[in-house]
Length: 535
Ligand code: ADP
Ligand code: ZN
Image 1 (cartoon, helix red, strand yellow):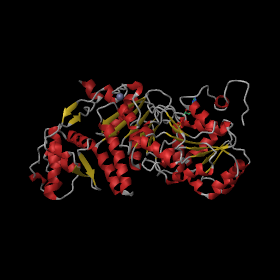
Image 2 (image 1 turned 90 degrees about the vertical axis):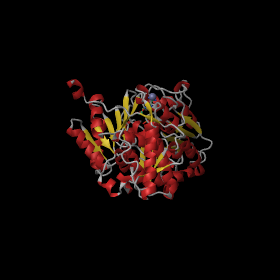
Image 3 (image 1 turned 45 degrees about the vertical axis):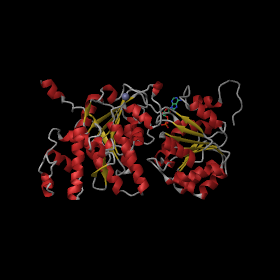
Image 4 (image 1 turned 120 degrees about the vertical axis):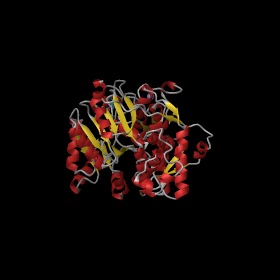
């Protein structure tokens, strides 16, 4: 317990300086810590890198007893505990990686009051042996990390989190602090409700990451586009490239290496030793690129990640924000770069439809994907749209935010009247459905519009349709852009396991020429440097 000292320095500030070696609190850290030290409950929404850990670590050190941290990131516990021990903090963890003897040692330390912090995996709290253990010694604070995992409407739901509401019932006098970097209003509400924290004080930090420049480009030849981006803007920089599949991770890492970029793969199919080695190299070296599935990056604290690139569309805006948030924690200029195409949308819709999960789950997954798509197709400031998605106001009350540091602000997309092309697409969809009773995806649609006699077009007599060849004024890539934007605007929908295109209720107004459809013009593909200098 802290005794009042002779100076005006609070106990919390003293711990910040003496134990962690920092001069001052950041943002809302001090307010959160004061509130929790005084015994209050708190819900903390702070972006990645915002400094959430100190918000519970310092109360745990200032208050009597052991701070219990519930975290799903089992793989990181050892590192977190080692880092704390290096600072002289008495810390331990309990999870499935410990053998019986190791577990007994930690339990004994806890019971003897020799731990300042104890990290626990959420599934352990289902066991009566664990809760009984916690009841036999003094707990100073419960910290529920990655608290968005309790949200069934969120993107990272973990059933074990639902059980955590019992903490408030069994330990009504111990303050609880829930922390997350995901902050839509819906998730926030679910955290408060499902963890039983109605009286908790909310601390909501700004989610803006001003030093990250957002850029979203249409996918043409993704690996080459990526290579060009790296060569031109990130030579020798550390960064993360996300791909959806393990296979794509492997091939992309090989491609980068073959083209002079030092890159290593990271995915759940690699053995633990290789993964650990690649992660360690990434943390240690200056300019390594990690090509990874989203399994990589949770809790990784490398301040000088200069770019995060996505070669496939993230499943949700939350995921995109979290992944891109790993760039530029040091506050220096960084890039969030994403290449996406119609095929991404089709593929993800198929995954949702064919995947497990009840109808409510699928509806949720679809609406997450729709929000992501609309971020990609927006003509507005990307940052403005991101912040709006998280229910936050653009900075300084600007009516229509123009951040000056995203692609749409830096080179505003031209818009064009896409009404006629939209009508052509929609009427082709109508005919495919009416006349054949068959199901076709976007590829077949584009072939028909362009008047291509492919085997599949001939097989289904699509060259006999009245719409066959009515779309030669646009190129294939432009048609794909039109289809993407119709989906993003809710005028067309992808359905079923086959990625069939179907009309929506709103489509009729376009077919009846009752409304105009504005489209975003994709930026022209950048000309290669060689071609430019040759001329
Ligand atoms: P989060 O959990 O919100 O992603 P962390 O708690 O890991 O963020 O903190 C991010 C980084 O900022 C860490 O390297 C941490 O040591 C550092 N940090 C946190 N608070 C402060 C502070 N008050 N002064 C200086 N550095 C800080
Ligand atoms: Zn902007």
